[in-house]
Image 1 (spheres, rainbow, N blue to C red):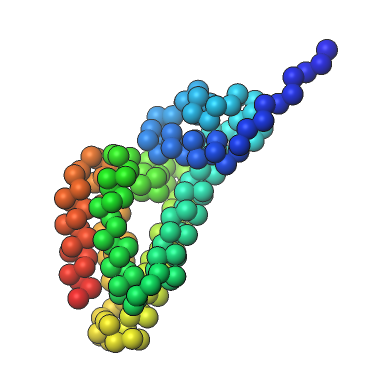
Image 2: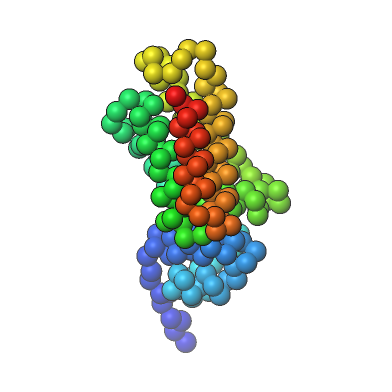
Amino acid sequence: MATGRPREFDRDAALLSAMDVFWRQGFEGTQVEDLLGAMGIGRGSMYAAFGDKRSLYLEALEAFTDRITRWYRQRLLDGGGSALERLRGVIRAWPDFVERGCGKGCFLSNSLIERAAVDEDVARIVTRTLRAEELLIRGVLSEAQGMGELAAERDVGMLAKAIVNARLGVTLQARLGAPREGAEAAASAMLEILR
């Protein structure tokens, strides 16, 4: 008896669909059936392409962190303007993230809260990504100091940590459905600190 050919599908599109489900519902709140419906694939195809639910979650989280890291690098390193202008532009974008997230918050922040304490791989991904963000911001702040945009006595390590922590706060508030004004206030406070 001949067996059916596996259904072909766009793996990247399926991964993005799974990412969206995990982002909205969390790991624990997501059933395999939710993923299958969103990805438009069968159970066998999912397991063959991605492994189990946890493996799919980790791959979705890695894909998300790759996207946000590229976004940060593009704006902070390749964007126009001075170092501080580029950083200010990123901070000014925080309220837009809140609105575009439609109450989902940030997948990385959500993973930090839900999974990092119980899953070493999630903790590793989150820690690595936040550290990379902090180092990138620190580098931009050091560049600003070198160009005379930021006073030499300012502690760029402390400023970078403060900016990352403020962004985390904004994304966690967004997950709770906080209005845009909260993100605007946090962004304004960070911009004041950078004067």
